[in-house]
Image (cartoon, one colour):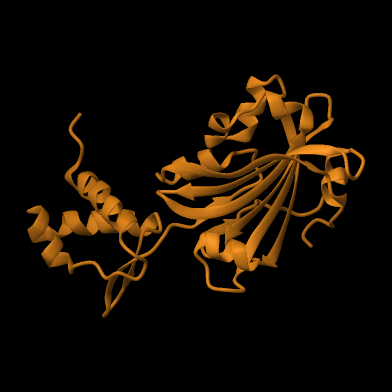
Length: 239
C-alpha cells in the first residue's frame, strides 16, 4: 500500500525538526508546498500531524516554530524506552557510573537493607534523539554486580536484571517537583536552578521483595504526568 504523500512529508519534517533548535521558524506553507511539489492542503495536513505530536507550534500571524513533544507519563508500568518509542523518538543511555557503594538511609529503607551495606549503584543519562531527557540514579542488590555489565545497561535495567534471574513484577512510584542540582542542570541542558520532575520508583520481585530503587529527574519542559481519576467510592453520589 502506497504511503500517503502528507505522511512522507510529515516524516521528513519531523526528522528536520528533531535536528533544529527549539524556536526555529519553519518556512511558510507556500514555500514548503513548492519545496515538496505538493498542494497547500497536503502541506497543511502534514503540519497538523506535527502540531498534534508536539513537534511544532503554529502561531497565527507569526509563523510555525519548532518545539519538542512533551512525554506523558501515566500510571502504567512502562519503561523510558517504551515511552520514547511511542513518541517516535530514538532512546539511548549514557552510562556514567557503575560501582558498589554503601547504602545511604534512603536507599537502605527502599531496598530493605542496613545503612552502610553494599549496593550496586548505576548512574545514567537517558537520551531521546541524542537529547538529554533524564538523569537516573539506580540502586540494586550488590549480588548483581557480577551478573550485569555495562553493555546490559544501554537499555532497560529491568531487562538486564531479568537476564540475571531477577524479575521485577510491581513498583511503587513517588513524584514531586524539585530544583535540579547544578550538575544535573548541566547534564540535562537546563538553565541553573531549573525545576525538574523527580520520580522515585521502588521495584519488587514476584515475592514482593524490594529489588531496585531508581531516582530519576526529568526535564520540566518535556514531561507531564497523566492520570485518569474518578470519585472516591465513599463519595456521595452526585457530589
